[in-house]
Image 1 (spheres, rainbow, N blue to C red):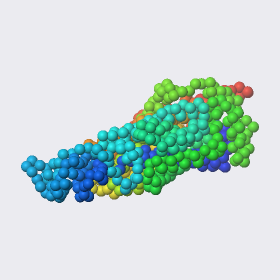
Image 2 (tube, rainbow, N blue to C red; image 1 turned 90 degrees about the horizontal axis):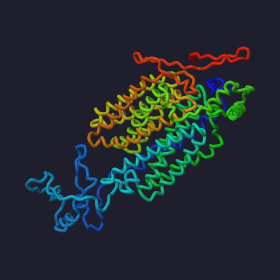
Image 3 (cartoon, one colour; image 1 turned 180 degrees about the horizontal axis):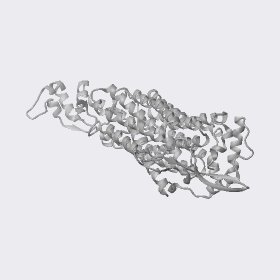
Image 4 (cartoon, rainbow, N blue to C red; image 1 turned 60 degrees about the vertical axis):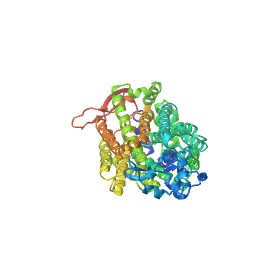
Length: 572
C-alpha cells in the first residue's frame, strides 16, 4: 500500500484517463461553488423604513417627513425602525401645518432641528417599505426579518453553516467507510433537492430547516471532490488539480452567482436556478470512478486492479501482470481489518498535535477570514453585485499563485507568506476606510487574495499530511471546524455597531494566529502521500522556526524468497 504511487507509474501522469478525471471532477464542484454565496444574496437586507399606508391621506411632503432622521456614521439617514406617530402626523396635516414650518420652529429645551424632531415616535405598525434598487425580494423582505426580528438574519446564516458542519462530519465518516463516489453524488443531490425546496418555503421557520439541509451538501461536496482527485491523480497532475484546476472552476462558478442574482432579483426564482448545476452533474456518475487508492486501503484488491487496468486501456499502455504484489495485498487486508474512526485523529500524540493545529488553522484562516470578508463587504461603498463579483474574481489569481507555490515552494513558507500578506492588508484598512474608498476596496481585494491563496495551500497541505485510510475524515473534520468559524462570521457585522473597523481588525488578527500555528507543523513538500497513520510525518525540531520532517516508508527487499523488511528515511 505504501508504494501505491510507484505501482501505478505505468499509467503515466497525463494520459486520456487522467485528463478525463481532471475535467470531470472539476465539473462536479460547480454546484457547490455556485451555491456557496447563496446565504449572502438570499438573506440580503436592503435599505428600509416604516411603511406609510396609502389610506393615511397624507401629502407626499408629509409622507417623507414622517420618517425621522438618525445619525449613522456621522451622516443623517432615515430611521429603519421607527416613524412619527401617524395619528399625530394626520392631525398636524389636517390643521394645515407643513413639515418645513415645524422644522423651523423651536421650543425651550427642544432639539435644534425644530419641533418636528420632538414629535412622539412609534414602531413600524404597518410594516416596512424596502428599497428595490438591488433586489425585488429576499427572505428578509418577504418575512420581515428586520428591527425587532433582525436577530433572525445571522441566526439563519448560522443554521446554514451548522448544516455544513454536520455534513462535513457525516460525509467524512461515510466516505472513508463506503467510498468517495457515493458521498460526492449524494452531496450534489442534496444541493439540488433542497435548493429547489427552499424556493417554496411558506415561512421563516420552514425556510431555516430547509436551509440547514442545503448546507449539509455544500462543503462536503467540495471536500470529497478534492480527496477523490488527490487519490486518483499522482505527481504533477495531482498538484495541478488540487491547487489550480478545482479551485479555478470553483471560483468561476462562484462568479456566476452574483451575475445570476443581478439578473434574477427574486429570491425564490434564484433558489430554483441554483438547483440547475447539480441536476446537470447527474450524468457524470458514469464517468467518475471510485478511488483505487481507497479500494486498496479497504482490501478490495481485485476492484482496484480492474479499475487501473481499464485506465491502462484508456491510456493505451500495457499494465504489468501483477500490479500489487502479494505482500502489499496482505498489507491492504491488514488495513481493512484495522478499524479507523474519527477518534483516530486524536488517539496518539503524533497525529493529535497535527490535527489540533490544522483544526485551528482552518477555523481561523479558511473560514472566519473568508466568510467574514464576504459579509463585511456590505459595509463598503459601491455597487453590491460588482463588489461581490470582484471579491470572487480575485480568487482566480489567488489560486493561480497557490498552484505556483505548490509546485516549487515548501508548504509552510507558502502559507505563512500568503497569510501575512492578507493580514497586513486587512489591518491597513483602518487607515483608509474613512477617506479613501477606492484604496480601501483595493486593500480588501488584496486581503482576500492572501487569505484565498493561503487557503489553497492549506487544502493541499492537509491532504498531504493525512493518511489514505482516514484522509476524507481528516479533511472533513478540518472543514467541520471551518464551518464553526463560518458560523461565527455573520456576527462579525455586529462588531461594526461599536466600531466599523473592528470586523477588519479581527480578521487580520485571526490570520496572524493561523501563521503562528503553521510554524509548528511538519513540512510535506516533495514527500509521498502517507497511506497509514504510522507513516504520517512528525516534526523533529522547533529551533528558530526551522523544523524538518522525515517520513518512515517500509521497504521490503526480497532475498532467497524471504521478505527482509526495514525502515529507511526516503526523500523524494
